[in-house]
Image 1 (cartoon, rainbow, N blue to C red):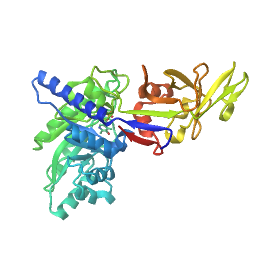
Image 2 (image 1 turned 45 degrees about the horizontal axis):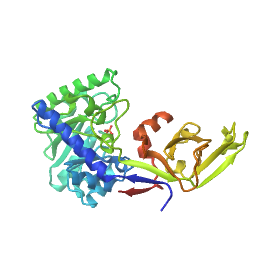
Image 3 (image 1 turned 180 degrees about the vertical axis):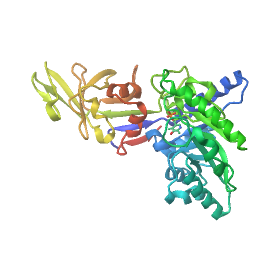
Image 4 (image 1 turned 60 degrees about the horizontal axis):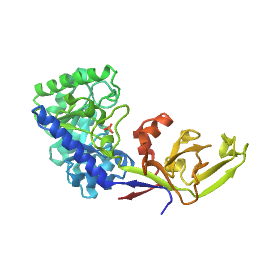
Length: 375
Ligand SMILES: *Cc1c(COP(=O)(O)O)cnc(C)c1O
């Protein structure tokens, strides 16, 4: 077993799912509405937690539906025995149309040409394909433009071999409470839903809310919500919640060597840290191959002996160095890079803000070399 490993707490994942589903149920009941279903987002290897293990834990906790980025991830879920509907967010390429049928995946239809390709494939098999239509309400990534749906949608909604089982959009600024685009997108989606109704699409599952939107605005819950980050116990910055969510992953290692520095001694590649006073440095076998961000150099902190130890010098390919002066640290001591150690906790949000990025990126970038240990 490698010294540096990611501990994934599947019980915490299940508890997060239940906390979220319970919250949605209570809040919806208080407004006299049915609770939205949770579409559990497990794309990108379940945000680095491990696609199949995470999805199984979520299914056992009651998740009624999953979403993945591409048909390859969908196929992997099916092969692992997941029976719930699986929505594929991304465009289905010509080469993976077969997967949709073989593995009973629900594709997203986001452009007229893609609709034709899927409809032809469905017609050739003599089946009616359930799909979700994506509306571009202002993010300008995937989807039918919101402002000419009466022209572009009829070939999809009227096609005998396509069944529009869902309709959705994605917010570009859900985590920015000041940005006016959010309200515009919300209104455009409402208008798009009316166009769909006028085209005879009724009963399609309507959904719009990823984690940030789910927390900030009950109006966009519709029939289903699509949390990713929240399930893994991380609240999208700068938001907060009173929900009892626990970080699912922690990243742990051990000190493998310590050495004493004299004033003037420098540390690591580029000699980017120089000791001003007698200091002690510890070496940890976790580097950028493992997903440790190089921008933590001379800026990050980790936990050693329940204290915050600064990262000194550059982050190397396979290791990094810490200033452990005065901590009485020794080889074998546990190092917590993300997670809890005694009374201290370092969150992925804090690490992301230290290096100037967001928690999604850091979670997904945890390298494949790191062993996931499931607890
Ligand atoms: C990734 C993704 C989500 C989940 O986003 P979070 O912010 O992690 O909750 C929801 N919807 C779509 C379309 C996505 O691509």
